[in-house]
Image 1 (cartoon, rainbow, N blue to C red):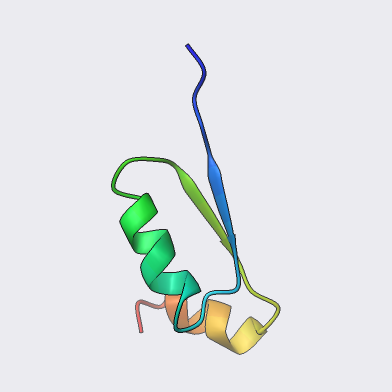
Image 2 (image 1 turned 180 degrees about the vertical axis):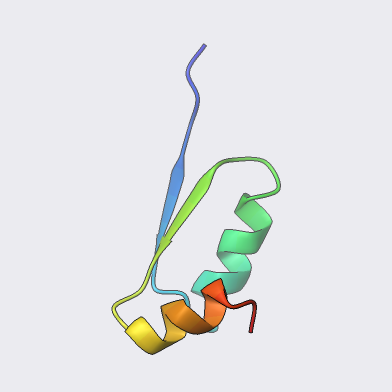
Length: 45
C-alpha cells in the first residue's frame, strides 16, 4: 500500500490552513523561508 505525504511550501495565509486541512488525512510537511514564522508555529502561536 502506498502512503502519500504532502509538502506545503509557504506557511502564510493560504499555506497554513491548507496544511492543517490536509493533515487531517495525510502526513504533512510544511516549509517556510521565514525563520521567525517557523519558530512562532513551533511555539504554537
